Amino acid sequence: MNPDSPAASGEGWEPLRVAVLGAGHVGLATAACLAKIGHQVVGMDADRAKVASLSGGRTPFFEPGLQEIVEEGLESGRLMFTADTSEALSGAQAAFICVGTPGGPDGTPMLGAVERAAEAVGVFGADGAVVVEKSTVPVHTAERICRVLERMARGRRFHVVSNPEFLREGRAVEDFLRPARILVGADDRRSHEIMRRLYEPLVAEGAAYFATDVCTAELAKHACNVFLALKISFANALAPVCEAAGADVVAVADIMGSDPRIGRDFLEAGMGFGGYCLPKDVAAFKAQTERLGCRFGLLDEIIRINEYALAGVFEKVRESLWNLQGKRVALLGLAFKPDTDDVRSSPALRLAERLMDAGARVVAHDPRAAGNACKELSTLNVADDAYEAAEGADCIVICTAWPEYRSLDLARLKGVMRQPVLVDGRNLFDLAQVSGAGFDYLPTGRPRLSS
Ligand code: UGA
Image 1 (cartoon, rainbow, N blue to C red):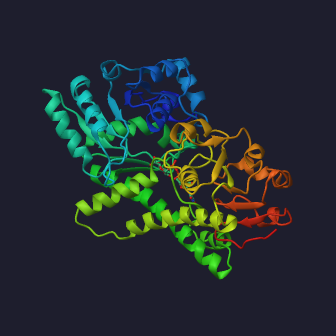
Image 2 (cartoon, rainbow, N blue to C red):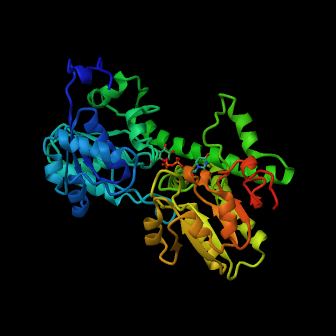
Image 3 (cartoon, rainbow, N blue to C red):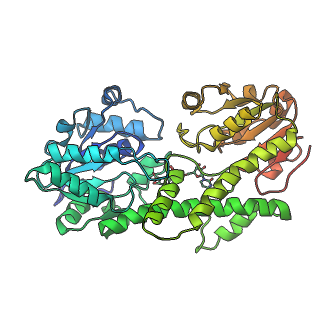
């Protein structure tokens, strides 16, 4: 932290007492990072086993840098955890709602946990507390939270603000402490002042700060994730066109991305986007726009292209192996992206299921996510390393762009396989690296190489 910042110098800046309800990926990163920048934070989760292990300094999932700042927070006395809502909320000037918002059958998120968290704040929250909507929710959710608070509060007053998170899994700590922007939507001056004070240490370090109204902030969060999904989908729609034309989608993306109006990030063609956020948020925004009576056909197209990207990789395997029945397919990578052990809506798991349904024997490897993958898909066989997964395989599919796979010994891999077929669902390898290795190499949107 900058020694000249008001937070560091202690001049004219007072930390806040904060409660964070929900210790999942967002809640835990938020709690630990708020403690890191100087606030007094209590993280609350109903799962007592999780609270016990957090209180002992052990994080329940892999997120680079998180374990360290949780330990630091506990040692400094600025961070503690409890399963008791009243203890968490007692004296809190800001109460963050970071509970899960899983997608329902029509895409509309299920907000029961948000309602219960709001009820708890209504019962135990301190008069004047700012209630911070951090979970990703549809526009106008804050109004609902206000009504719940009014119903429960009996004379105490609360103010609801929207403060969407823009943390990427695998980069959550870095994204919180060095954010691209901080977004706060509030409809009254006092809430804006409190939220500005909360984030002052980061603003003093140069973070961009957007203060707007609640509705705009809520909508902007969905718009951001949907646009990221759109960008990925553009690259994924371009990939088969490049394959048909004999062009290279990676080179096209480099050329497009060199224009600052376009930007290179999120133009990686592959087997589709996954994770807890992007698929759910596109579906939620589609349901929301329909409810608002607006036509936004692009959203259907994003969903369709994402399905097609996964189907494209499946077809490459089938086309190469002819009959899938009894063939052994090695999947490298199970996490929905590198640097996380999260397999929620992971394209790799969806591919595994599809291959197994078609009669293939699937053996997978992941440096971090194998345990979570087996919980999700109990029929999955996992190997200790990539070479073991490739033993006797008819095909390898790169499903997650873990950097360590880049340095695999391709000759050794080929040596243990039954057929040298390498389908690259993430364009992990350079064409130069693979050429000469003797594989039938099928990347995504790039020219193929034959053995
Ligand atoms: C996403 C957003 O990037 C965050 O800004 C946001 O805060 C977060 O959702 C959220 O709403 O909580 P995250 O789910 O961690 O973050 O994952 P991303 O890094 O966005 O990746 C999503 C998926 O897209 C992954 O499966 C990844 O492999 C895929 N992807 C990403 C591509 O296929 N191509 C790309 O060029 C980029």
